[in-house]
Image (cartoon, rainbow, N blue to C red; front, side):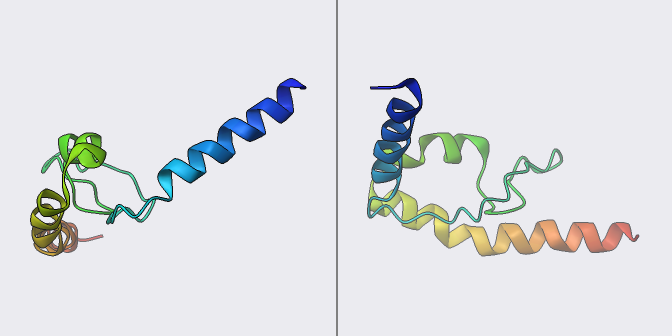
Length: 83
């Protein structure tokens, strides 16, 4: 099997792993705000992002319950800075 074909198989298996039924707030805008430590895309901390697959459904729901307020706070801070 060629190197390229093996790489394609590796990517396919990775997609299969990431397409499980684990709910995620990720919107693929991964930038951590230095002031708050939260991602401006999803609102999670680096620790929450790193541990997401290890959390059970209840832990993920608990975190997701706080994300709306976190993102609103990040957006409000940016508006107040002007620009």
